[in-house]
Image (cartoon, rainbow over all chains, first blue to last red; front, side, top):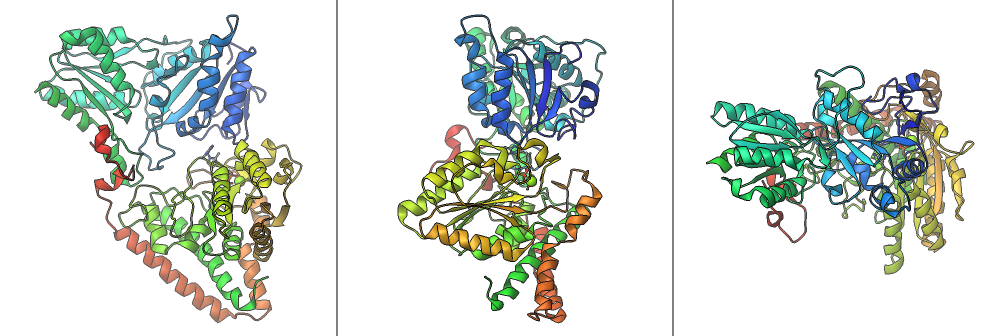
Length: 307
Length: 326
Ligand SMILES: Cc1ncc(C[n+]2csc(CCOP(=O)(O)OP(=O)(O)O)c2C)c(N)n1
Ligand SMILES: [Mg+2]
């Protein structure tokens, strides 16, 4: 925001309070109340005005408090933001960022816990980012704000208290570049967002059982860095994908298909998808834990595939 | 107008709402409750007065803060097991208590999307109209919800179609941590935003009689085919938006509202008019507390649900078909 005066940020409770998860705490004081401000409880206003502002020369960053509410601005994202570059006679695009939180684990119930990434994976024109480490968060958020296309930036609620090294200064991470978070030779595990930690935990435990897993974090779901995944599968000859959304119809199926297209004969094992069951996020403590994909589910899938 | 013999019942409901919320707060602070409390303390008269004014087969669509709806339409054990997410709960732990639906109790299911239930409630009005049923729908929502397009589209449609719907706007002046008038282009009343052609009443939400009478009149209009009413009840919540959020509002502002406490106002009325005495108040309080304690004990001992409980997705299709069950 200091670098580019066209960037401004607004949303529900983001300015005075600093955001429900306090992500923007202190920002108004630092940047000023003209560029960081609170809004009515109207996602329609947020989605619509962000598109309009982005189309006309600014770079809005809006916060949608819970990813579940993206359904409300789906029209603005899908029919407007994603399609205006296509629809303009010139080079105009929609440089907006929607920051949102997602994921289960707090017993917030069916409408404050979803992983909505798969809702938007079939929309040409949208970019989607789901960082898993503090350094990637910083680097990717900067890239998202500087990007000329609409970006949905997914922040996993369970990971806000994660700490880690964060490079100083103008640290950016390119959009569309996966990161190999752990290298291994027996199995490629591709995990999205908050599931990267889960996959790493599983990989640690699998290592003790003699399975050497490579964990790939695509970091950006769209565009997806297929090459890194396919190169890895050519080496490990096996693939497991992990995401928090329902297994059926999730991005994992797409990754599996891409691998089947381009590296089928390198595979020595069935492809495994780990995701939530095909049901809304349940509230009860035990049900929610059963629902959430965990390290144990990843281990079971990997061993299943390799044995 | 409340008949004198109904006054005791009315007060019991006010007390139930108050005592229940206080208990929730106590248990939450003590040992935790899985459903994050969004307490209605201070706003009881709006919910209680509205539900009291309506018939049992009228539909209710609560906001996340209208505890009176579940308290007055479900058993206490249902409400508390619902908050604990245990197997005896009304949705067997699938969902929280504040958005659950029950056709038996004529509570419309709602969602965590604030304000999305306004057009849905208008839909219940359509049903009543289509089927020629003498049923009214009351939908509760906050000042925050009134900033959504849903507010305007639902009011317009209900007014155009003369739907038997009562829009109960609980104006507690705050939208989480944002002061309503900071983000609403109104001088004083939220209903100023509505240019729709329907009766609008701005009332004192701390006065249960005023709530009750206004709702009764609105229900009468709705039942006789004269369409919807927008009621803006001025009220205030004593607690923060939800119990994880720190209190940042002005102490004096809170204290000022507490001077006109809805439960105390009605109690004073009862005492002044010798409708009840202190003994009645005490024994009523005791017996309500007993029921409340019982419900909490029951819920605390209840088991968590079986895995099967979470696969209630389609009415007639198994989720296994979709690679569903893990
Ligand atoms: C569509 C939507 N946007 C935002 C939220 C987050 N949220 C929950 S309650 C709330 C404030 C509601 O204010 P109001 O409508 O005035 O009701 P009150 O809480 O004051 O009773 C907000 C912003 C939500 N649940 N749904
Ligand atoms: Mg409010």
